[in-house]
Image (tube, rainbow, N blue to C red):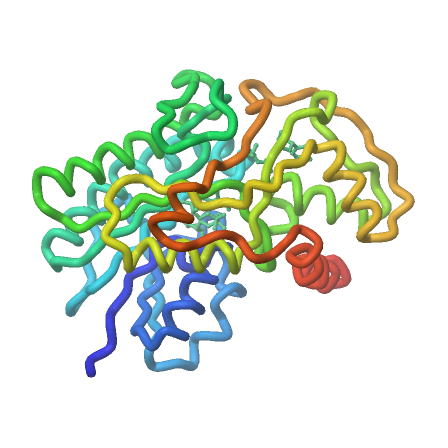
Length: 314
Ligand code: NAD
Ligand code: UDP
């Protein structure tokens, strides 16, 4: 049987590299495409010796060419952490819009199925809690986070249009905060920030009064949900995340305990438009994909901490 051929954009990033591992494990031929603006070849160097793996250094906001057939396109390229997309607002808007358009065109030409990485950020600072897929969101288009949120909302609209008008097979996953090995220590997201600070004996920087909530999903659970969604026949958006919700203050305490650190919590100003609460409703994923997360935070944090300890010690 010929191997399925998969293009993974953002393949040198945190989630993209885990997807490369998963598709190779499933016996696919994997083409990772990345321009390395926030990713790193370190995440995929263990794959370079394989003849079922290829890497293209390319910006997907420019015309995308891939030789040969493609069965699946997984579009994961985009700056993803707030400090990254605030530093690169135009690239973020372009990869969500022009990049998505290029890849949908490629999917149409190759008759490939395309899955896009959308986000809980399409719900903005949500007025419905927990967030269900039929909630339209509360996004400030001209605020600092608008570059990411609106790029992702446009990405969903464009993907649905290609599905409806061109009959391209598409899938939309709305990913909630995910963590695990291969996150960048300096990407500014709360989990690497807190773990790095705790390991270096610095204060943990909680923004605002730390009462805002997030719900953290371990990367292996997320990848399983995404893989099931790809193989399902559901073209409507599906939330994939872990509903276990926690305040940033509680999370800081949890990290201090886990690392055995004597650091304190230091409060810093809350960034503009920072969502006050976030928790996925995953009933649809349960019904349609027969999926729910398996890793508790304490189970997922162990391998994550081990990874960061190695990074901090160099
Ligand atoms: P990441 O920064 O680790 O990975 C993104 C990758 O995309 C990087 O390797 C980067 O170099 C690459 N990239 C960016 N722009 C590109 C371009 N124009 N052309 C080619 N490559 C480009 O981030 P991540 O956490 O792995 O996120 C991956 C995807 O998942 C993103 O689309 C993000 O919006 C989405 N997502 C992630 C989370 C999360 O919690 N990690 C939550 C919601 C959505
Ligand atoms: N946060 C924090 N300290 C940090 C980094 C982030 O208190 O050093 C807060 C941030 O204000 C937000 C939450 O942690 O309320 C999650 O932030 P992150 O950047 O990880 O992702 P977001 O869910 O906001 O995209």
